[in-house]
Length: 178
Image 1 (spheres, rainbow, N blue to C red):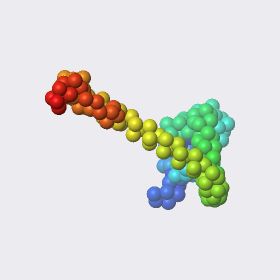
Image 2 (image 1 turned 45 degrees about the vertical axis):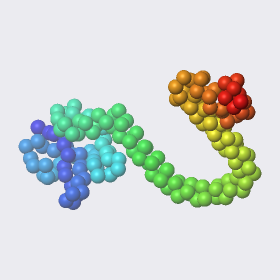
Image 3 (image 1 turned 180 degrees about the vertical axis):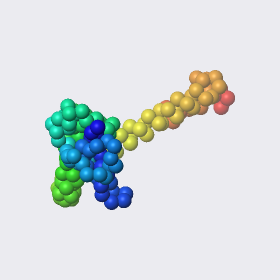
Image 4 (image 1 turned 30 degrees about the vertical axis):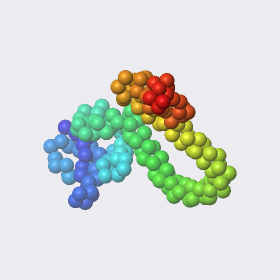
């Protein structure tokens, strides 16, 4: 009986496989009837090349595929492996383009520095205006808190003159002074 399976090649800790058609009763290292592809799992993305037509021919002749070979052939047919290879190639191109782009931003800050002085006075004025508004809001909040914190509310506010209002004497105070 024939079997389509992987034959391990390569070095220790660096496997490489050949996809072979061989007798299922023989050891995997025995001479193969035919080599129909290869598989390199250590590549990024994994490199797979299998002659799918020859694999189909051998399946028609009665050969059985190992589970791993079935998975690899299925991925080749659906195009998942080519998509992964294309994505890896695109990532490599982007890495090569990154040093060239790194040189461009070094030039752009100089141009931005030339334009910045014209924008700084306007930005400084806006920042000062915002700070002034914030201070006004805080002052109003403090006044409101002082009014609400004292007992009696308005009566206490009348007894203590406010900072903004001119000092006026009330009738009760006028009678006490005389």
